[in-house]
Length: 266
Image (cartoon, rainbow, N blue to C red; front, side, top):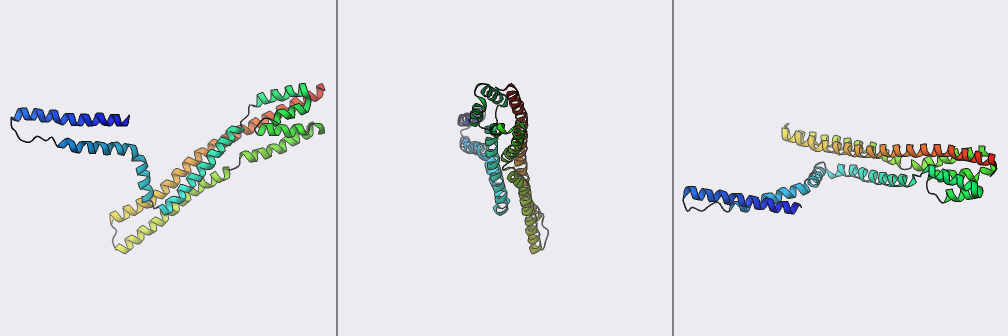
């Protein structure tokens, strides 16, 4: 599509000068050489503009990365890469851990009514997710009484919660570390800028402005990384809270089902 648009633009740019030259030739009635060679430079300008639109963002990022000094920008970039990798892994894991608790409760209740505890264990063992794992632990303690089932569910629920929160501490670390690295690069850059001013013996606006701009690029990079990772972190925390609420509600429902099963003696 962009190539087609470029061809239309080239055709339009080359057509307009031809019409203009024809009108000038009719009005002047002279045989001087018309400015036909001017369109030759126009396609180059259009091509440059198209390339600038396609590669502008990446080129700007690359230039700013180099201007900010790769020595100080690279650690910030590493924080972003590692933080995003952990965040994406957690997002996939948490989505896979999501279980339809109501459907699982119904299956467990039907299994208890038809085949007893062993049938309910088979249902929970064949279901993935932390809720099913908690159900399995609770059903294994059924012979010891409802109180032991509740204690087992609470204890194993804490274990599953720890698994869900795995990796969040690293994302939190990168959120704090990226701005710190950016500030460190800024301070070091300012020191170098003042050293340059001292060596030059004159406060030149170009020296001061250039040094400050390069120094502040690391701070901007660190803040951008922290903002991106903070969004992922908040999403993960909200997802974990939702899973924990489902685990608690499902655990209460399981205890109610087991009490009902024990009372009915089925």
